[in-house]
Length: 197
Image (cartoon, rainbow, N blue to C red):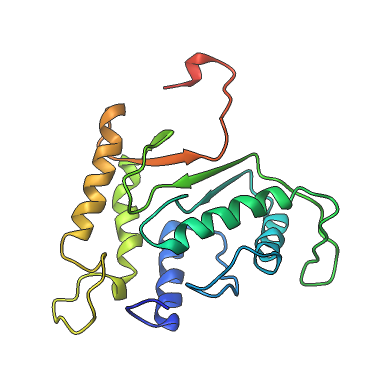
């Protein structure tokens, strides 16, 4: 459903980006872009991946964002993380074996287009160049000097400057050049006040 590029181009860009980030695996679920609904057919796909991979922490879309898919995907993922921990919801791996229940310890939402208030920020100064390199693999989405592709909210010359500025805004309160902001899905606990930076 994306305005720019094709599903094939975006898939190739995503694989390239995953390699830059050092992702162990990457999987695209068969959930329709732009038209998906919050229903068992869709969240069960996420449950299967959660139970197969057993992550301690899940990072997902912003709970509220410019693109309506982002908020819907956030809710779908958050709920799937809960359902994955329920014994009576049965899922099976690719070999037909019943999967064991699994619930991540934490689900955090990254902040996308809207400037939402972060619950915590992570210093990414050392990783910022790699983040931008990974983002730039999605060439079909960004500024096209030929002007042949349709304009979108992220295809203007200024979008990459916005990404840098956002990183700097999140970094300033903790005294670093760049940070990434996250929103917690539930109140985090710490064992000691000194654990808070």
